[in-house]
Image (cartoon, rainbow, N blue to C red; front, side, top):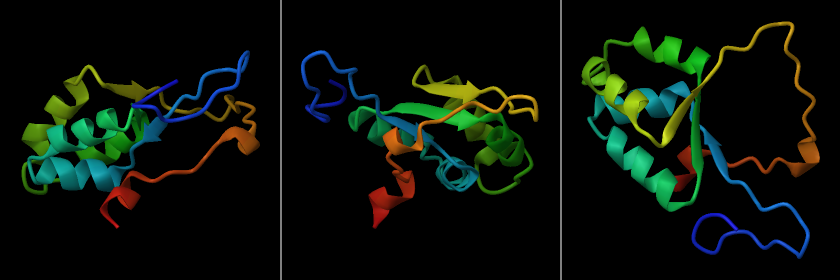
Length: 110
């Protein structure tokens, strides 16, 4: 079981794994406002593992908005955040889409 009682596993089944793949918009806005710790805190409280694709990192590093330049290294250094390796054309993982439940971190604010 992950999170705080989230997910219901039956005996012998694999435990539910909650992940959040954070996009550039979330990273830029939270870092620009100096609130990267709030983003990490919310996703961690929801029991989610936090992943940021390398492509998102490259996009964030090009931004010159608010406190992004100062705050990005702090978000990246969080022990709760994992930067994913960049994808290459040769890597095409097989994904069982029936097991993926799309959840956007942006939906937290609606």
